Length: 403
Image 1 (cartoon, helix red, strand yellow):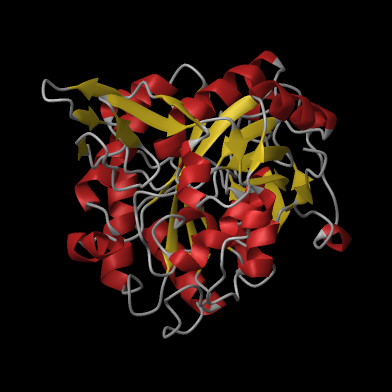
Image 2: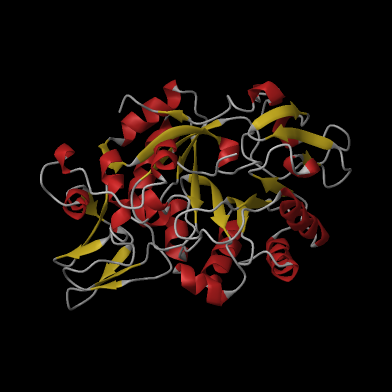
């Protein structure tokens, strides 16, 4: 199955270089176009010399007047932090399992929106067209997908398309937190829950800012080697701290590790990863997903199903209760399913994004032993949408074409 990537980006992923199509916006640069869709940020402090300190992400950039943060989309204009506002560059309704969230409204759909920019520069990024805008000229094609929109319009489209959840993804949502929160307020007023799909390079201030609206927080734990994290533009401890703090603060956290041959797939490193997650809580779902060659990382082989099964087995050995192997439906044995950690009963049977069988009772209760399974479940189990193996290729993203 495809990763959490917008459909238009998958089509353009083979482009090596593309000039920005200026016909849609006039003869201005992508940077100028994005700068015209900004507002004053909230996640920063002003300094005496006109500089400012942005704390939307763990970089905590010191930004002098006229300069930009590492993400390229937050900038200092006369001592005021300007941040992205009022547009999307990717928008579709995805299966919630695609985020991936396996313990949050199974079988539901998530209206997923993204903007442009990122605080990392991962060489294997599967969303590089949107994430590396203003950093890599080959990503300038992303300007063609920018659409102005209001939070109310997004909430409206989520409702009419049957979404139970709204999520910020495709670029790094931390750097567009102010816009995401405005969208989430409208979505929650319309009866939807909100989730973040993030690299986890957060700050305590931003988590506090998000907490009133965000129910689920998916965090990538890319490697347990700080040296490797720094190659991607991050710091390992920042991500580990985010996982700990997000769990302590009551977000529903699920952790994802993209298993990359030769980068992070040794048994020792996978065990370190799993043990860390288990040390925070053995009830945090850990997803080990398959790498495929993309962007600038084309040397490693694609991840095999046997490698994912090995990683999942390591997670169970480390004491995790819920370990899932993703992206290769039907090839990873029991590691698509959810089992009761108390009695071993099969609770949710999956094939890719399809729920083949849902056996939890209302509010996530095991029908055999009566244990409450950790997660965000439907209060009424009959609301869960199930399907069959024939739905594997029809349970897929749906474009929102009317904005």
